[in-house]
Image (cartoon, rainbow, N blue to C red; front, side):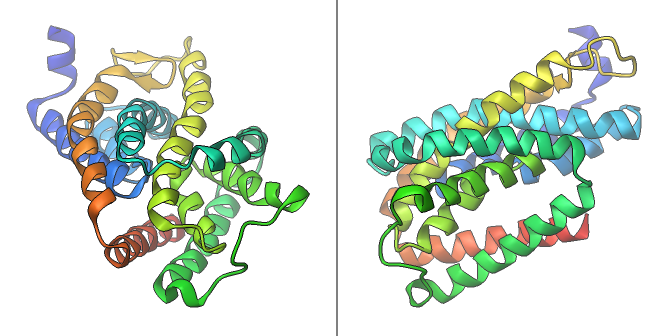
Length: 271
């Protein structure tokens, strides 16, 4: 305990707890994983405690993925109780989404980071436009069948896993392209966050055990204290945000999601 206190001053504790509140709101309200908020904050935290810049990047991403995994359980449960998780959609998407996740993890290891973030930013900007226009811009009035129905989950899983964001960040606006109800898309997105963060967290937990220069609480590339500090407030906030999401007007949720996605796209482009 003394080592943790000396490694993480009280100001860092407060910053992590405040970030966890924001993650909980996004997870419950919009089904967004929150990694796009957690990663830049964690980079600042690790820099402040003297972690090398190269090491801090993998630590930040791994810790963020573990945080998304923990908070997604609560967010998914809250959306399930609110009746906003479309389990038929989940079953239909899950096999192709899993394939996409595997492809994305491979891409993240070999593809240039600049290329991945640029592609994500362009796709996100296009989806922001779709959300802003609303139901006037759709590809079809129903999801495609057959092989074509697997293209969307493969693309969502690949891109989300490759750049380290929650699956709901992309799946929700993609589903609205096929006139899928927004609230049910948000509930499914919370579950997709869970599906994508699980294998990513496992990978980060088992790597780099022999590498020096990590904080005292690190297991692989996951800083366990940071996960706890980020997850604890999110676990309390996410259920309340999910209940509000189930009752909120669709137009309000659409605008909030468009704003959130626009901020994410701008951050990725800036990177």
